[in-house]
Length: 289
Length: 126
Image (cartoon, rainbow over all chains, first blue to last red; front, side, top):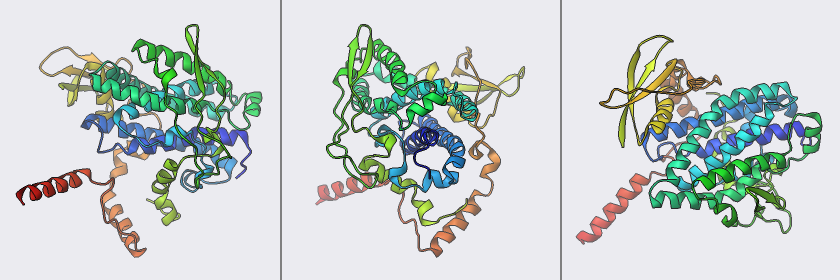
């Protein structure tokens, strides 16, 4: 697989985010807070995995590997998703926080990619967005419900946000080869520019429910450990990029030291997910349904 | 939780018909959950919810994309034909390869809970 093709890296980053978070969402099937939500969240999980398929179909000719092989036949270190997507679901408060952060961030980058010079990607993104807007709506309704709900619900949400915010920032980690993507117009705006746009909306949403303190009080997320998903660089950690309030908006300061998801560096949480996600493909290569 | 009737309009101009119900705390939630519970396979052109035993219909503001826009097999009823036969065939293939599903996934918490409860009752009896 041509590891250094920037367009392939972009497609894999987008597809892997959807694939991995889709699998995490699907783990709520049978366990969501109530029956209707169980169906809704399972449905969102299926959508995300379907979106991954659409994007992997675009990646197929660049990678020289089939869609199933790209989705399920790569080693953990070849996946390019952001670390937040692989984290276990935890409680419902964390799940809602992550879905809200992920889908609002995804909305910002997909809106930009609609203007991509890559016509196939732009067309695919336009279609994907028709479904993604429901995911954003779902996330926003739950976000507001928990934020304004009973004390315990609000506490769970704020705890989930404190945990998820730092890793959500790395959804906008610079892609390897990003300069070339920008120059060609495949990526119409830089990841740091998209991050700034997302932070404006995020800050406003959090302030509207008086939860903006989580932007300055988020939790440190721990060490990046060497796993089969890729070697951690010496001394690298999942360092939290700083957030600062400047005037009426939040801005990111510092880099994404050690975030690494876009370069194939993941946590042990992904090893466990990967084992399960790819188990059948590895045991019975070429199996058809 | 409030019970909401869900109504659909099969085609533009057709009458509303009740197609099911959802439990939800408010109308926004009811509209959201009705879409995923009852319109997963493009069953209607648009839909609405109505708090049970009331008359006011609350229509979905924008029905574009109901049932999804990306054509995937799981969106079509015919994709589920013969699933039982497929399960049996795959089960047989797995058995031939020495693979057996011997426990539920995810771990059955209910069973563990009731087993724990049973232990506690036994201890109490002792």
